[in-house]
Length: 126
Image (tube, rainbow, N blue to C red; front, top):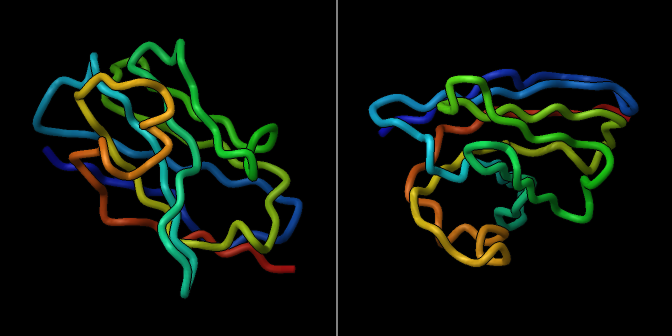
């Protein structure tokens, strides 16, 4: 299984940016796919995730109302639409996926995710 993330870049505070992650090698119809981020000197933190049908979505409090996670029609992609970006959103963003079913709270941690992408840098200037 490979995850390929794209869409990072430089944006001014208050702007918008979209990230996309494509999975290859398996069918992800039953998988949770999500995003984590890691800023310099900080631990990796959960950002958002979506179930295969996007009927269930999960967001960190810091991005709720500003970011939207969605699954593509083929279910093998996860997108992250980011708006009202802040300098503190600057980080390397990683997509992740799991085929395991847990309680919702567990998806807010890195532990259930078996597959990780290479990361894409998002820089928000003030």
